[in-house]
Image (cartoon, rainbow, N blue to C red; front, side):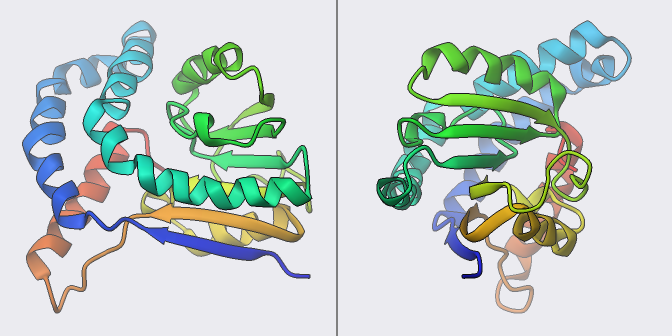
Length: 220
């Protein structure tokens, strides 16, 4: 049986755009000097990614907007867990670990995070979520994990707000299906792009957001 994909698309595109331009963008611009220093001073870099980004992406607005969607996604993962206890799960781009509270108890989780400074935050979650087994925390990019992860390794792969920041999406998807076991599932929660023809203004804003995100938040 081939692996399958479950895609969830963010239904709050206009709202997210407004939040970005009124909250995240001004705050990040204010933090630009800190980010510039972070490129040259390891301590500042660790501070920026481990504290500032953690606070921004665990804020009340983000959690409130996305909690129901994440619950819906992980409800299906929990149903999968009923027929296959102790699921082996790979989460790609876990960031600050916002998905951890939703994983089925007993899951064996491997994380693949490009930003090494967020691993400190993920490591703290081991104690908080003792019902989960955090098996391995890898530093890498889903586009190039051939040396890190073998074929047919995981029952489930999870990616939330991931592929909007992956340069070579086709290569990334091929890697996902390579590492999934036969019959495995790939759960994707992703932003959707507006059509350039139907809504050119918001599409241009989204393209800018993608570039902005890669620079400030360590996207690929």
